[in-house]
Length: 331
Image 1: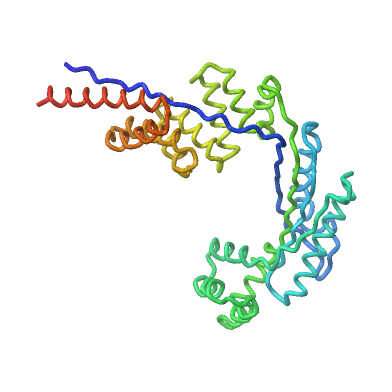
Image 2: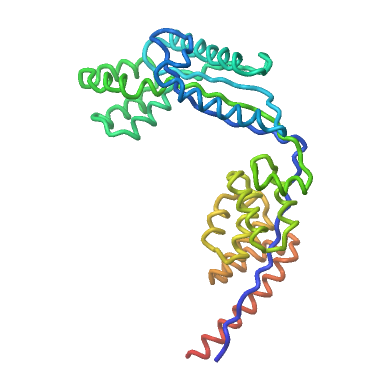
């Protein structure tokens, strides 16, 4: 009998560029309860202890890390969309200032790093909440929100719908959740050498850059569990980054995990890294038995000068010849 030929894929990882300054940001949302029409934070009022704890946990975590320098705190307040725009802007901005004042009383950051913003009336949050809920007149409410351009007209139509019953319900159940303050912290992380990075990846991988993780991976045996784990960690921390996705896809292909490789490759714009992307797509198609597609991708990669693509074309030729021989034998 003719033995099936097992393809040996040839893949190449991309080294991410070095970040001279590793700038990061993190944010926490808190839904603070204020006494009606007041803008002073009472830390023990209603749900405030739990909500303020979200921000404390985030900032304390950063302050306890000696490798981190906090640059700025942006506090953006959103208003629920009832009442006048001017009133909402006043309440929202002053509540944001109240949060900044509260944090300034808790931490030793210079006041100059606090920045206050008014996020506007939180219409997006209202749409999201209505879509997620199961309230009566849901379709009619969403139609008003989507097809009424003027904010004032929107408010009036919501008040008038079904005698104002759904509006009163939203005022009680949804609107309080729209009065949200978002605290965003902008910070720098110092750079690490490879030996430091090998320790950091076990404890605080979010402090590493993609380049630092790549260098860590290359201290391990190619294809080993430790080696592939680094690329999985990288793509979890940088899910939008194309190099992270391409390297994770290549790692998956070396393990013959085609489903995972396909998922990572689908996140990449083909024009970003044409040669390496085309090579990975070609290998995926080859392993899936789609030889025509494999040839198209691999020829494109080879034409870009990628040597491993030429080796994969040889593998493709061997696999096709082997498949033809098996088919002939079975006839």
